[in-house]
Image 1 (cartoon, helix red, strand yellow):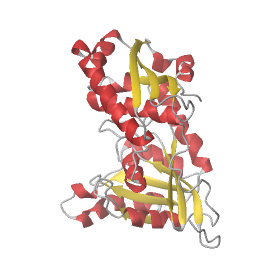
Image 2 (cartoon, helix red, strand yellow):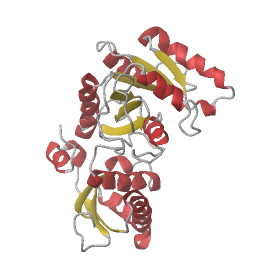
Image 3 (cartoon, helix red, strand yellow):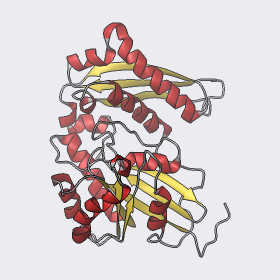
Image 4 (cartoon, one colour):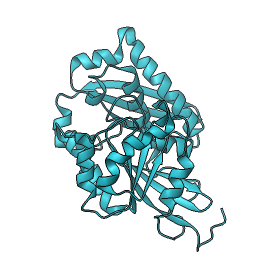
Length: 306
């Protein structure tokens, strides 16, 4: 990429929204690679993950934050901490709301309360316009927020249908500093492959288990060896522990005759092989840690560090 220093803009953009509003889906659609965990269940995202979108005249580092919610345990406190710590270090906020919402909910009000003292430029992205009978109906949603947060731009989008995402990046670009790229142009994420592996496994659990299970699950990658590090290896070896809070949850994840955990492992392995570019041997274990979401020590051990 030939960068014109006078025209190129780059910077950090926080994606904020309530759980399951489509923040991660927007990032994945833009980058055209799955870099953020996505599932139909809320609070899939737990960490503030930096995903990098680079085009001819811009580089946007999206900080994909957890969905804003009222914490009920130490894990929830960590997720909200990830949001509040991210905001002072970004150049722009992209506030994602859902088309069809015609009032400000409690979670959206929490976001507004965070934004008002910061004086950051805010772009309102009205996602899921594909669910509307007429595209122009998104204005009923945007009008609810415009008088409160005074966004610099309002962009109706559909992450699923790839609608108006170029308009969204153009609007964001106009508020980024004029400066060279912050990351190499071929880099799409600043997290480790070990972190990505844990996220892929956790996402499969979210998708394949009942509502009560996913939020009680964490994934700890105990071993991660790749052919890049060990040239004698032809296969990436990953050993991970799935941590749950109750014995019954362990039974659900394992499934009858081990069928559920086998399916989780197969789906995760296939996605990891696609991302990494070489064969993967994935070994999964399930361990019960009662009350881990309430224990600061266990949270730190599992990588959720304040």
